[in-house]
Amino acid sequence: GTRGTGKTTCAKLLARAVNCEHPVDGNPCNECPSCRGILDGSILDILELDAASNTGVDNMRAILEETIYPPANVQKRVYIIDEVHMLSAGAFNALLKTLEEPPAHVIFILATTELQKLPATIISRCQRFDFRRITIPVISKRLEYIASEEEININHDACALIAKLSQGGMRDAISLLELCAGEAGGKTDKEITTDIVEQTAGIAGRETTARMVSAIIDGNIEASYDIISQLYNSSRDVSIFWQDLMAYYRDILVIKSCKNAKKYLDLTDSEYSETAEIAESIRREKITFHLGIIDKALFDMQHS
Image (cartoon, rainbow, N blue to C red; front, side, top):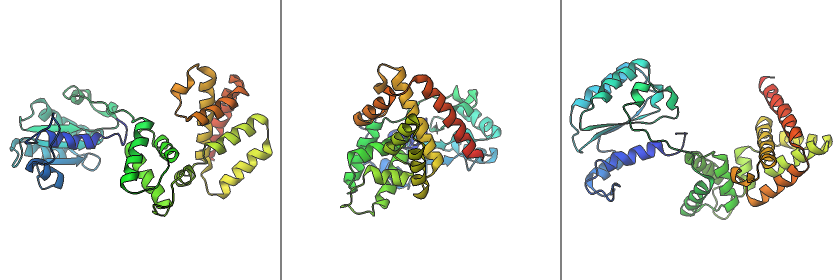
């Protein structure tokens, strides 16, 4: 699955669940000596390995040599190998033999963001679980819970914007929430608004993007120059704004092409109404023509 969707977190939960002395409907109780030992790191039979830093065959062989010994304090020894696609061909071959005939007391959990880079011989010997992007409402609700627990003053629209910017990754959303809290001065009395989120993330905001699109459609060169000038003077990254512009045109194109466009767009009611109003004033052929120019301009910006 993609980054920040809970792969390593679930691996650690599973490591506790298979060793829990009093599981509750298959879930770890987090109270027994095994659960507490795994949580505080005192039980060394749960090993987390970063494959990006330990790519070689020697690293893998050193780990596999330990698998013949039974665990000291728990029922199962669990190896969590993160970013497993980074292992070398030799390391994969060394791991393959153990995966073919694993000892009864050992469990391997392989986590990766790039499944296509894993050899078919490895994949065929594993149970596969796909972690999908987390939806915006779920992320937004979780951010509101975290904010209330941490006494961070943030409004609903700001949470929704952070959730949208995180692109389905809970970890990215929480990191951006922390940055916004810092930008707000860490004071509970100062509310985190969409303006603070936009400023922290370095984006122009949908309102500015909508003004730019309207200026382009109306042929108002003065207004478009004024918007770019404001962005430049406020130290915003123009190439990021350009990507937002492409995304806005994409939303317009979806509205022009689909009857149930709202189902495919992560927009609030007011944002959808505003975008639909702009979509009424432009033909589909012109949208694709504009997108082609914007796409080429972005390429030129990045290579000029």
